[in-house]
Image (cartoon, rainbow, N blue to C red; front, top):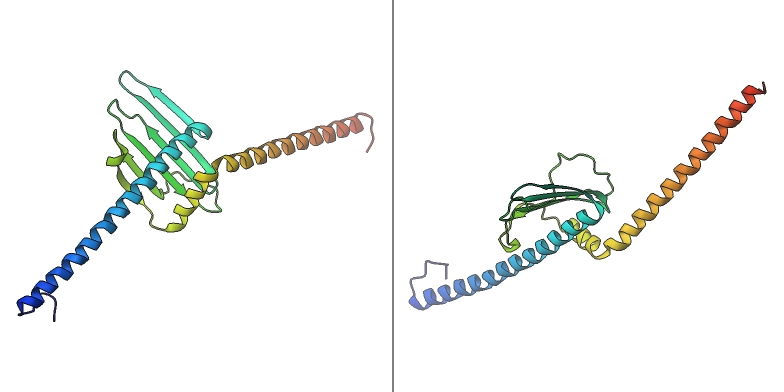
Length: 188
């Protein structure tokens, strides 16, 4: 029996039933993929807006009929994030995620790993860029789960850097003071 070319009506009916079964199985899979992608995008949108508000640099512009809030957070556990919310009074929001493992993100002209935008309902969002590599998705989900502990580590490292810089300045000031006193007293 060859697909679509069977002269026997019974075989044609069997072929039609088999094709219908295949189509029936394909639709739920696609629906599940859509549902899974929407759940992921919803979580990412909430997380990116929250993390850029809490830890990033936020610029807020209030005009007569809309408020535009742009948030950016760079180099947070191999990721950088951008959010742009409230573009008009009817909505308009966008989120960008940049994945740069083991690198310091500096270049703002690189293309994002994930970029999507929506008006008032995130369920009607449009995805501009979605890298299908599963590694960044797993890494992002891990960051979303553990962002508080990651933030504490970053804060601790920043505090240590500041303390070390302060100690280095004190040592340098002491060295300069000793050199100045030695010169003033003609000690070589």
